Amino acid sequence: MKLSIDPNIPDKELLDACIRGDGAAMSLFVERYRKLVYFAIHKWISKYAAGEKAREDTEEIFQETFLTLMKNGFFALRSARDPQKLSPLVAIISQNVTGRYFKKKWKEEKRRVEKENVGTDPVIDPPPSITLEEIFLLLDKFLDLLENEERNVFELRFAHGMKYADIGDELGLSSTNVGVMIMRLKKRFTDFLKSMGMSPEDIL
View (cartoon, rainbow, N blue to C red):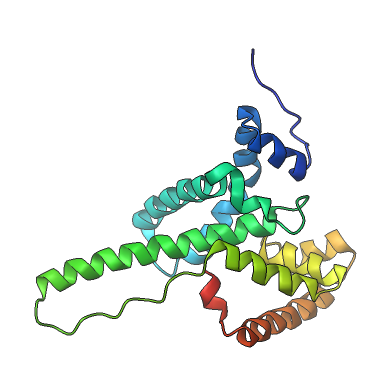
């Protein structure tokens, strides 16, 4: 019997079905979030690779991201502050996986170079990536500081990558107002991370 599921099922119900092991739900989950995951990866991958190599890395990271999302019965997504809106966590996890992927490659390259250049000064390891649990806690704390409208703008811009005008259409705001809000939110988020002893680069 062929499994089927309503393509418009809410995120919370979709996640619950995935946790139960529903194969159709898992396929829909990948289809629903594939564009967001690709967007999140492409947003940062240009810092590390280009051309054909970037495309190969993107596909590897894409697969690794969904393995991470599904690991241990979708454990990472179970801690979402709002189970009805999983997009922010999916985007952040995608970026985190991208960062860890290239740090691993950097370490492998470092070991290769050290073997070829015995006697040279050692290369310092990069700081460890922040854990997903720490990211969730930070995001929760910051989002709790925002008003509903600010939270919506933050999610649409930084989780969905929407343009100012599209965000304005979605929320009934002018693109100018959206731009001003985003500038303020970026500063508030940077200040928030600094107050926690971190920087925006730490959550990649």
